[in-house]
Image (tube, rainbow over the protein chains, first blue to last red):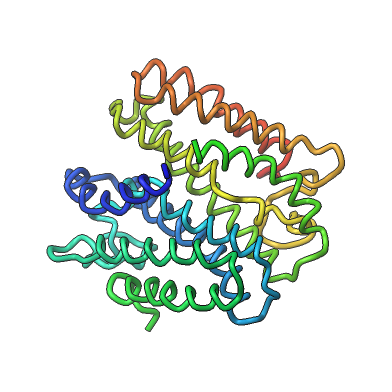
Length: 158
Length: 158
């Protein structure tokens, strides 16, 4: 329960942080924020890798490992993260980030997309330990949710 | 409460994982595990940077930011992490990690050190939002706890 509340706060914190941190940060703080975001995404990737390998049948389905991975995603999504989504840490302002300025622009839907991602993660948490079919069914919306945010808010590889 | 329980499980999971994953993993899994550990440490570093800057009076004391950072440390410490402390992912077995084989060796005290770290993190959570003196007092044991584990279980820079 506490994790869920924290996650709600964390998702909501994206817009709050925009106000709270709009007073400017130094280069070291901005670089540190970008590194923290990447670490956060890397932790998602670790657990998604476990779930994805099972979904693609590259690894045998293991209910316990799948549940742990899904629990991990929920817990990571619940981490306080407002502190590392700092205005001024976009890819036009600093090096070594692919975060687009659109994240912080007027009309940004990043908060909504964050909530959708969290819902997809919760659905995976409910499904992952059930069976392979349930895991596969939850993987599609989860992957789409990742992709939807990356499409609009992360610099393309191309 | 749930976070605390999860953290207990996570700390305990170090030894459980040693048994559970001793059946061997492929190179991709081992590399992925090392990357996840580094991301996990990077997230600690982000929040420790916030607290450390205040402790060294390089940044003004901000009770709310300090509390958020300390809450962040507790939440990260509570993440499921047994999955990325895989035997065979030490620095003698794979590239791009400084994790020493001693972590997984007989008589390893890594579980005990993990519990000590978690206690230091909880103490920081109690102290950080109180005032600067309390934060400073909690910083010493926390830094020592980080260092104690790195000294024995992480490859030295030298």
